[in-house]
Image (cartoon, rainbow over all chains, first blue to last red; front, side):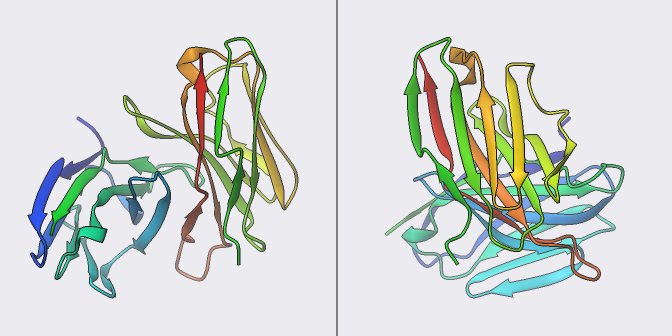
Length: 111
Length: 117
């Protein structure tokens, strides 16, 4: 079992739909990252959070430390949101700055 | 700010050749990471530096891989000799010093796509 599991693996939505991507992890963590990788390959850090909720534009990230679960929400989705979304955690038992990555969720938003 | 700068963006080489990938982190960032991404294994940390000092190189696959950070603004990842299984996208990322209560956000370069024939 992977330490970090994302669901769904693939998601197709229509423009305007509300989207949720989930990330579950099995270890105690000090921080969780949500990353976005566009078809061109570049990776962008969307959020880093250790508790509660963060919002940036149409993106919202939440984390429940007790349940070891985080969600990434996209409101009013747009075709330009099509990308791979990757969850990564910094484990409490992990030395230094090593992150454990999920396998990613491929999101396709159709016009 | 230009962000993390990597070069080359693409490299195609023959098995056995030496490959050098370069990275310029964001000015003021004191941590630098080298990641490798493949379809089979996803993103993997190869090595990271804090204040130019290698901290964790346990992800470096084997002795053919080496990384240096001679100063705060430059790092190299070298593969010698290269093999077809080294074909991947190599990402460099940098991180600002931790703020109070935080761990610092990662900033990634565009990646270097390596193909070893």
